[in-house]
Image 1 (cartoon, one colour):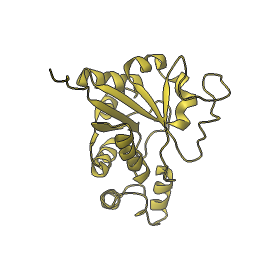
Image 2 (image 1 turned 90 degrees about the vertical axis):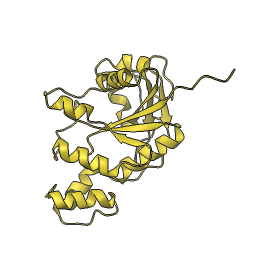
Image 3 (image 1 turned 120 degrees about the vertical axis):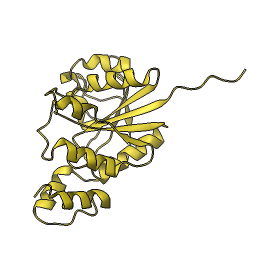
Length: 208
């Protein structure tokens, strides 16, 4: 008798993506490879729960994410659609949505390592580990070896109350803030975003 079909492995990578840039996309492609994902969803945030409101509106950010999406990478409008009804984006709701959509698939929620200390402020954060793997990716300047978690002085990859895996990915030191400021100052951004995204920013007159 042959072996049963293995569960699909799906990544969820949310962000404001204002705009999406090469750092986001490099992380996404590395996560697909290192976590052996069947595919990964980029999820542009509608109304952020812990960040300032986006500069570009949802349709622009959605389009730029679609233009930048690479191999095995899809773009979901779930959180953006919820924002149309003034619903704030929470990770637990997004994970529940993908659980409903993909049944028995193994879900991997990607977060930045710099967000680990904020997790206790998230809505129903303890329920996340029941629904998905939580994978923290390294970012420029983030030192996970000394990062506190739930009052502990030293961060370890697996915490008894909320298991978090650390995915060490070489980070590109690029930020959406720097890109927006560069556009405003008429400085080149071709080294920070894909050509398709750069052309869209120019054509749409964003960030000026």
